[in-house]
Length: 79
Image (tube, rainbow, N blue to C red; front, side, top):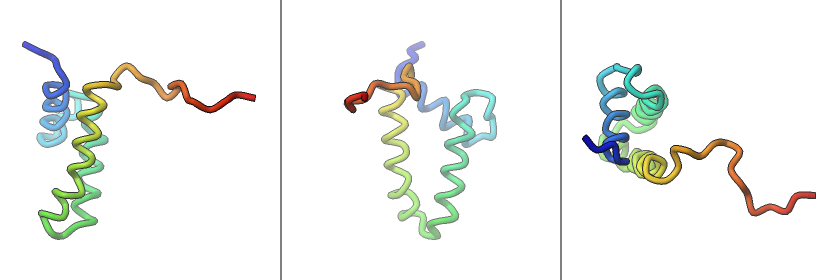
């Protein structure tokens, strides 16, 4: 079985959607974001539209940034 970015994201979404937060450490954060969006938008289409950027960002993280930490390099000159 492949463990590509979509598989990783699918596991996170399934974990958050089924209250199996033990399946992926990111699931609790996704659940919190989803619940927050549901409180911000009464309209399902508005909620979906707002949530798409979250899912896009999570996919990019799963594709490109899973090994990155908060100590990433910056382009700022150090004094």
